[in-house]
Image 1: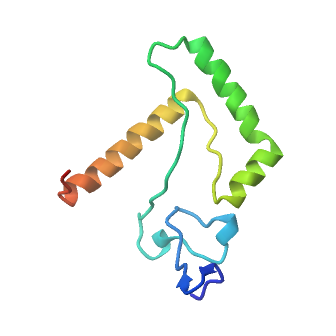
Image 2: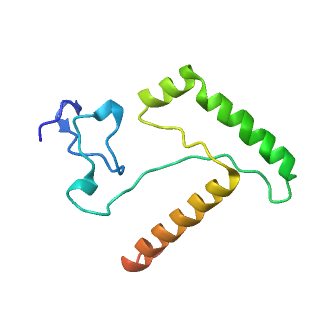
Length: 114
């Protein structure tokens, strides 16, 4: 596949997300050729463990409203990102799932620090 998403002499071949990005629609996900492959980065906002539930719910609602603003979602799309808005419990599950996935990669590849 020839991509128009090149940078000088570099040429993008695929994206590592589980589905194509809007900004790189001509690029297929790696998982199309290597089933199960998915590697993305994500960012989240967390609070100290003893933060009152009401405060967390209020913050979550305000942040979700901000991310739903058309200018914010459009800017994120130009940077190749999507807002994953959900509950604090869903975010906790994402963190646990990602920790498990990358932990298995580290153990399988026998990756060591230092």
